[in-house]
Image (cartoon, rainbow, N blue to C red; front, side):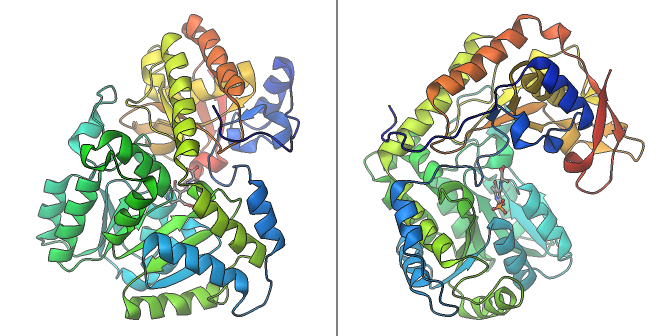
Length: 451
Ligand code: F0G
């Protein structure tokens, strides 16, 4: 059961199918054009959507808004330093700000960033500084159904090969958990080996630690060597295997806004500090208010609570299991922050160029007011200016991301029931065609119609 009770509630909109059909059509069948009033259960993102604890709110009240050297910063730094062990701790307003600052300081044009999987803003930030991103996920990641425990791992052979040249690798970035790769965890053995290889070749090894606690939780559950270790110990060890981190605290900081850049190298830290001050804010607030910094500090302490993590993982697994019983498969084994539904398998009558994943995500909205994210050909496929799909994505997935401490199991069961209703007559679900397909940031700006 949840190791907390509810003290503040917020009504959620209960709408009719007619209303949703009208609103969705008005928004060009793009979920990003829906507003909060249109959505009953919002599983679009687990980022910045969590519920604050009473202690976080109390910490916020203590926030010190001094311009330079605020007490809130000292508290933020103390917690982040203890957790990560990094010498230099910079607050930023969210994860992508840390990425932009680090890559600007670290990556030279033409240099490669290697990762188990770059998140989409991470890819964009590598490209914006003239770098080249390359994903080298492990082989096990290709089989969506297998029970392999650490499908988030990087392919160590491919890493070693790439580090040997002739390519100029500027950085190795390990994303924990692997959000682009089905929310799967990375083992400590894999982090250790990737760290060793990177250090051998003198390449900085950085963690994208957005879901550091959830990765550590899965390590304690799935990696024999760490079974008796505390989540906090595993988190600390993982950070200490890397030379630094970029972290969106909107996930495992359980805050609405906040991020962290941590580094050991003093010269790199000096360059990042300059960029931080020029673009985010002074080094002791980095674009956040004092109350944000205090809420981040408290969140970073709360999130490693094993009772909280166990319940969160169990709730996600429960949703995946209810979906499976209703005939909807998802990427196995289930991770913590999301269930990745296999839309391709449920809707074989919709070919990738009619956007299978988008079709399932759309039906979840139309049938139940549930909003979620497509991770298929609309988002990851290659599409020409006329909106025609040239190369499909490898899989047609739909991500149901679970906000932290927000929805109860009965909300999740409602999602499963809605899915079950769709799975009864999947052939009734229509496909989609792009009618506006902007080249840049397409998923957020495109419009579609039903076919
Ligand atoms: N890295 C990972 C692995 C992420 O999942 C995200 C954000 C970021 C970096 C960027 O952090 O949003 O604070 O700037 N993921 C959100 C999501 C948006 O829905 O998965 P940010």
